[in-house]
Length: 452
Image 1 (spheres, rainbow, N blue to C red):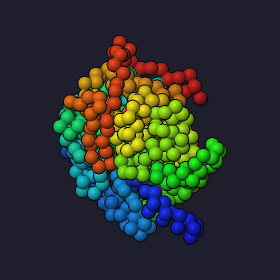
Image 2 (image 1 turned 90 degrees about the horizontal axis):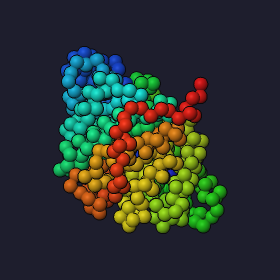
Image 3 (image 1 turned 180 degrees about the vertical axis):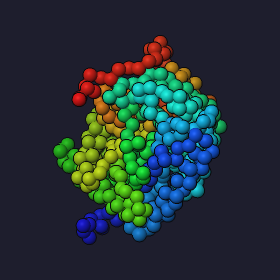
Image 4 (image 1 turned 45 degrees about the vertical axis):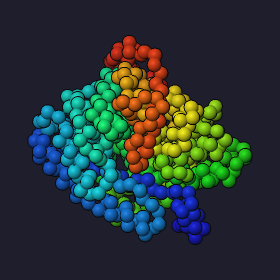
């Protein structure tokens, strides 16, 4: 039961500190749409998506009006297409991507995720078909997002798959070079990908999920920053307790919206993702929390410890507020989508290497980082491999969403627009790793993966 004081406090968090529900994402199972004929398959998936999600956007808007809680995005995730479309007799899956895009437009959502493949242990012919389709699919659609899982703690890392994803990134960058290579912003490479992530671009509806589910992504960097301001100069125990209590309050708002959306749509409630997801707007920045904790800029000595403290206590507070916490659940640190992160890169405080170090203790990985357009595919493979190794060894989800902006160099700025923001182009270590990444094959799982 929410008390009057809690209601008043929630109103203040919304009006003064940018508290919102970042996304209501409906996961939809497409396995029952299987068909050997690609046109029939596309017709079935369009029909199922538009039927299941017909009222998703309207319901999100209604809840926002009635409860006064902004619901920013309404999205859909589907069964990985490399699995759902495996029985289709077709040369590629580009038409499937176009169908997903039309369905997303028809129901009024801004993104649809799941043009995906799970290749952490091996690659099937159907996986190859999807991987070959990704650059064209991302270039020709507005709403479709793609992801590939190339590693896990249990199975190790598929180096062949990493090299393929590096080429996908290069091809996507070239095919959308007239828009600052924005195609890459809709493509994520994962280690230990989760089945219930509501955030894009990496969302897909896992095969262990039901026919449909409602997953909520909450966000409140501004609320946490306000709370941290109130204990400026206090010791670490006080800081941690403050973040925990604040995360609890934020998550309760998400729980309310999740339950109401589930009831109205007649779709089971899945999880709440506790992630602090920033936007380019002032006052909605994870970097500003780090500065309020005592760092001049993200990247200063102590940054990894600060993000670890933030991430851990957001989770501790959030799990007390909901029985179903999942997704990625942490503090996102995308460069282009966080004004404070952009400033840290611009002034030289934050490098690609420091971002990588931060991801050891934070979800989800190197995110929305712009790099020079002439970065080689071998260098891309090396960057991805380092991040996948962090995920595999530490038994956590890590990811890379990196954008080699064709025609731009270090110091230039890439402009993506909307929630994707803009990003200064970051320096990439120029020393060669080609002989290492071209070894190929599969990197075995770590010894601590054997837990049976």
